Image 1 (cartoon, rainbow, N blue to C red):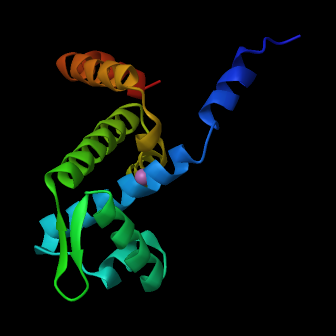
Image 2 (image 1 turned 135 degrees about the horizontal axis):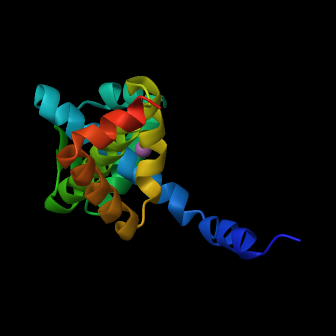
Length: 152
Ligand code: CO
């Protein structure tokens, strides 16, 4: 007999649709902030390309994000992240960066590491994130340990 803790935690993780919708919000804000950084602005078309969704769905989501106070959206005047939107985007980008570095450190290739980071980034407990950060700092300070691990 196994113990039911794993089942309980699966149940907790799937408790509601909220997690899914907050992941989507985070991904939109992440993409928008990457686009703004790269080219100074983000268009509906750009977003639809990077999110793999139709332009009308993007428009609908942008309206929702506007109502939530994450950005200012005017149909023909573009998209601007508010302070609230920027801080969410910044936090996702940080989580993504830490995960990417961690996965590459343990020998995962860049492509797979990025793909996995994209999924995991929404589901990290702050404690997990802090420990990952600590682990990365530790390995950076002890390159011989990192190297001997990679040579396993
Ligand atoms: Co993501």
